[in-house]
Length: 396
Image (cartoon, rainbow, N blue to C red; front, side, top):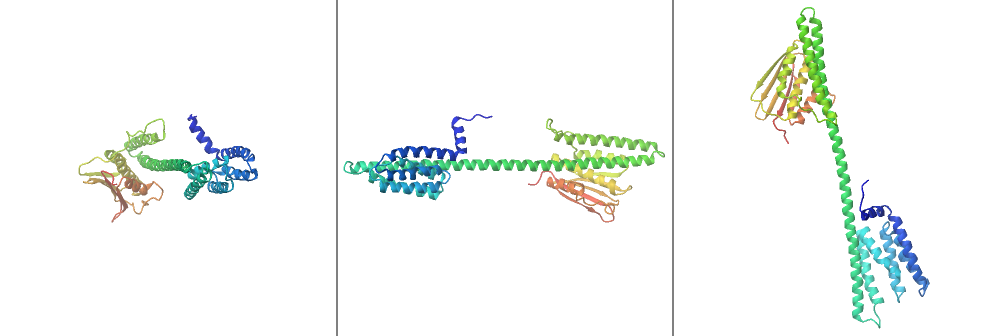
């Protein structure tokens, strides 16, 4: 538990016990002033006035304007009714003025200062003039009261400024904490979406290849044992790659380990992906135009996943004899990537998925996330085309 200085601990404790402190202080001051007022002459005038100025101090910070108004009224009554002496209860006047300046509304603070100034002038003339007092001493006493009242009000106003600064800092801290929590929630949501999209790409592609190779190997095992062996090799290779990708993806969920980015697929890995599917029997051709240039890590992964997802859809929807062309065209502004098949894509169910982060919708989200553009749809004469344009630097 942190240790705070004594002044800080007192400030925290007093802020939590405002009502109790004010009432205790008002009660003690009232008893002291009553003891003096009861011995004055006439006591039946001094006692009510003393009570009227000290008792309202119990609400000087909870009902500031009302407490100040009552005290001001009895202070004026004191000047009018008690002409011979100042009762000790007049100490409630500067205390109430400080409270008005520090805790009350601005109109109450200004009004309290005006009343206190007029009261100081009246008290100076009333109690510090006479046959034993010169005009200079009266003026000096009145000026002292005015300076004292002004100083009390100024200290109270400084306290108001400090309170406002503390409230502003507290509110800013609360807003920053809220913003931090919202950013963490948005980051967690984005990370969950990214992981779900990666899981879909890895699992869907791998299982599609494995199922296709297993079916082909099973049907061709009797007639061509070598084809069955090739299918099993493709299944093993695909499974190992999927396992490697899954380990890299799940490393982000482990707090005790840094994220593993060494096995993140890149554009250069598209060649191996195409070759793997070509070995599995899919008629796929890779065309590269232009001089390859560096993309951001996210854009590299996006390009790979778009090709992977498109070829997976070809395996599932375009028919066993479909031909596929994967084209990489490196332009001055970015990578123009397309995957086109001549199979039954449009009629075989290759339609944009409506599941969040899956299918064609997932590819579009990936491209737009890195400032690119994405289109997908059937082509004239049959087949389906997926096209993505990824800039070298993300547009701001």
